[in-house]
Image (cartoon, rainbow, N blue to C red; front, top):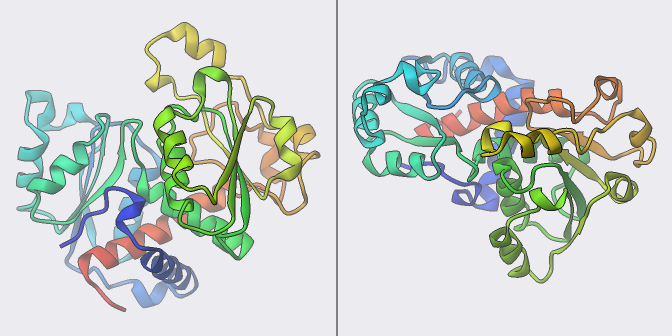
Length: 305
């Protein structure tokens, strides 16, 4: 039995195989429509979510399985003080696989230690979000045809952004990758992530403040929202929330083959006018998230098609 806590739980070969399966599911959905008949996914969401929760549920339903779970901590026995360990012990009696999002870093790892079924980390605080990383990787590969030899700009909340941290770690395993980190000083990439980058001398990176300075050189721009729920001070959030806004004027500075990704939800950081730009791939990214989660469910359940 395997769990997925970070993208590094999967080898590069396994990542490639998952992305291949996701691509095949997209082309031939009928082949997979009954692969999970009789199986149940438990979606255990202690923190609000739209895309991730619905994506997991849609993935299981499209595989022929069923879903159960809760959408917030207050609608579970956590409101009564039940521990994560006890919750997963109970859920293991009912379901075949679980996806857990939690506001506390490391909570899905605790669940995995006590679970009798595979557990997928669907996001834990500001720490990791591995299935979003799988979504990002498959979207980059399908758009650019590769995952190596790439210059990737990451813009916005790089301090608290778990999607950013997970994606960096995953991309460090590919050749000829360089990063441009675009953020205000208060939301810079944490020191521990910088240390991980320095441990890979073949990977280059730089930190800049202005989005306009970075756009002309990028293959991929990964926009993020400033996350209100991660701030302890409302004044700091209000001051920083609109620091970067990608609009059509700024997109004119980018190359014709640059793509724009965003883990969503979007607030103000990408103007609606950008949605019609063929380089905007964030809604395609959402759909890819369902296909890659379908592939992951099959892998963790040991189902071959």
